[in-house]
Amino acid sequence: MLTAHYNQGNNMQSSKEFVQDLRSTFDTLYTVADKTTREYFATKPSNEELLGYFKIRLFNERWNMVELAQAVANQPIDTPIEETQLLAKQAYDEANHFRMVKEVIEHISGVEANLAELGATHGKKMPSQGVFILDKYNAQNDELVLALYQFLAEGRAAVVWQAMAESIEDQYVSSRYAKISRDERFHSEIGRLKLEKLCTTPEAQQRALDMAQNFVWDLYENTCLSIAQVSEEGQVAMKQAYGQPTRELSVAI
Amino acid sequence: MQAAQFVERLELNNEALFRASELQVKSYFDSKPSKAELIDHFKGRMVNERMNMVEISAQIAAAPADADTTELNLLAKQAQDEAKHFRMVKNVIEHLSGEPCDVGAAVEEHADQLATKGAALIKKYGGDKNPVMLALYQLVAEGRAARNWAMMSECIDDQFIASTYAKIAKDEKFHASIGRRQLMQLCEDPVAQQQIMEVADAMRKDLFLITCAKSGMSPESKAIMENAYGSL
Image 1 (cartoon, one colour):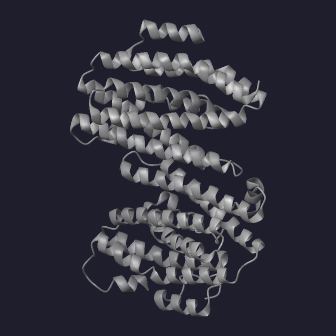
Image 2: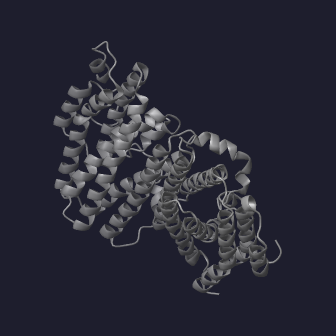
């Protein structure tokens, strides 16, 4: 669907225009994630349910931190310093988020979180975590995929954290999530800048579109697995915007 | 010995290294090095900042699942600072030379001297595998770096460079405090104290020799070092 949308013209778009258009195609995915998040929290989930949810988020933040730190450690020497600095800033933010989500878990449960125990049950990358995508598409060795992940997945994360911040009454929790949301938006901008550098050829633009088509469904599945099953209305909106999924999903569509 | 007392003693014992290093830095800048020499010197500093960034980031990536979140947070802050210093020193080089700095070429130029950079000591002393050694490195090497950058800032007339280095000095002091915090936790264990006692003086001597690599060793600083830690 995304590919068809962009192949209509013969002239290649500038990378800036391309990335701007690409961003606008994420609207439906983001809206569905936002709505699903708000609907879920409106059901007033129990503390137990909330803890289950936040444990998934906790290790997603940790994995983001690990992957970003690894990316900084492996930067080729000719990488522009500004890019390296932005990645290091993101790794620091992810470490911050990891600590903040741990504090939220402790705030809700009233006991200190045992990271070793939590790691045994939630420490592996799972489809319910956005970071699962990094391994699935070998983003560690593919700068276009990493940039697209930052742009699309971190942008969606910003929407979801903001929806949580606005849906959760507890001020301790909501203020932290508002802060995380702001950071995720910044990380999405890092992805945007990198994509604008990379998507300068028709081949790179086509590849970004193909990958985005996969990511959209991975992130849809992620919403269903980590928050709640998307409503029928949301499912219809997804199919209208993106066509049929590129693969069989483990959730309803 | 209690951890707090042990760490306080470690810090007191660092003082001779810090003072001797300051004297070396002052002596180097008093010799009025040429612009070409300065640029080469700062390229070395830039490569070292990059190495610090890489090594600390690798530590974060490899941290065990139960690693303390505050500790990880502080390390990530340090890695971010090192990335910032890397850029700031590059800016200083460009300010001096008036042309863009080729980072890749600078790293290659200094490739055969990597063992003489402070950051190389992280691996030499097992800081990449042992948190006690990493914390010791942070306390000693980053503490010394803070004093060296501050001395450079005092010795250099150029305001752009002096203010940049004063900022770096402040960050390095913070990094040393990360090491202190970590040591306070780890050194409740007598085994950790023993490990540190076995290598601390050797690490101090290595760091001093790195400082002297460019400038030669002044008799005064040599005497300070040998009085404190034995023959070099």
